[in-house]
Length: 465
Image 1 (spheres, rainbow, N blue to C red):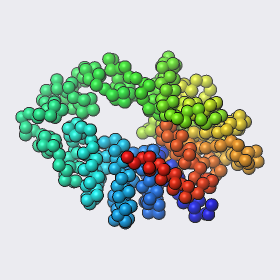
Image 2: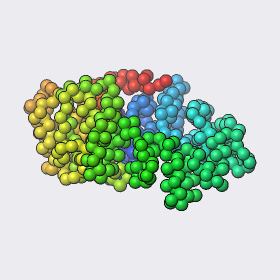
Image 3: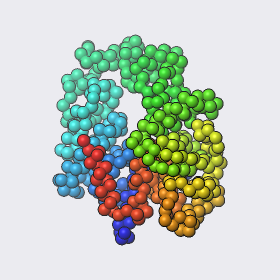
Image 4: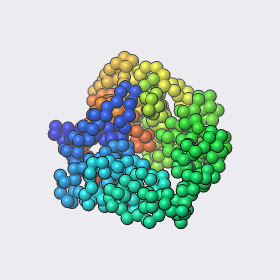
């Protein structure tokens, strides 16, 4: 491969790593918001088609919104056919994003004065596809009002009224709008609203004991994620239980398990382990059992505790990866940096002896070694890179053991690497690991830039409706 192609592949994979792992929040070793903004500008300017195609990847919503904003902000720079393609990708990504994130994006478009015909069409189509616009009118009232005014949307009469002059009608014919109106004057009406709508009103109108009564009354209408959020935050109330853990996504479930005290984890071992394995089997899908002999090297050092705003996130990704790799492999063995025994009882502790544990993992001669770590090798520093160099150059030059590094922590302009010979990809949710491992080969010179384009084109074709 020519140097220019290798550089292009490295640039794109570096950006994908950031788009997956970086959220702009503080990490254990610091934060890097400015570098993330630079990466967006750099890749959009030099590889615009690929920049748009990354919307088809499992990147996080913060970066997806930044890509959409960047494409719409600079639409005049590209010809009409390319704009149409970008519009299709934007619409497909917005349809998969959380509505509150989209409404924040639409508010930014208004603040920046981005209001061309294509932007208005994208906003109009997204709002028209919302399953219940009356629900949005009370749940995301300010966001919908901003979008409607900016894009000149035609809304149902009562929806427009509730957005801009809700006190005027004595009664609404739409049930949720009428219930929401009455809830401002009648506390009993709060119990008839969906939880996500009633929560804001309840926090200001109800006393503590009334709030507990409210949660018990509304419990039958809570979604699984709402129940999980209440339990994880410590705001659970007796009678608000019955959460079906088997329906919770893998990484979110791992975060919930790690939020519990270790004695409770031990007491609920069978329930939690069964739920994690079921979630892992769902995430593995058709790839289950196809990865052969796999060893997982998982980081449970102190830095895996994350930061104040991302508590235990790196450790949760490692725990989720343990169960996912178990589902993907026909034979699986796991090595934690410090922990032994039941993985459910893991907790962040100690230094990061990656080099020593790599020797243990490679001694097993697996077909595939997957390392999940933030990449900070400090016991002693640099040992992991030297182990991997000697392994690749002297002991396994034919590459019988495939090694890949999944890093859940964004560091500067990229995720931190273990060694130049080992592909590293950023990961936010362990569920995405199988697809990200396929992307890793483009960062090591083993696949061409043309192959990278084909890989992304295939993803886009499967992504678009």
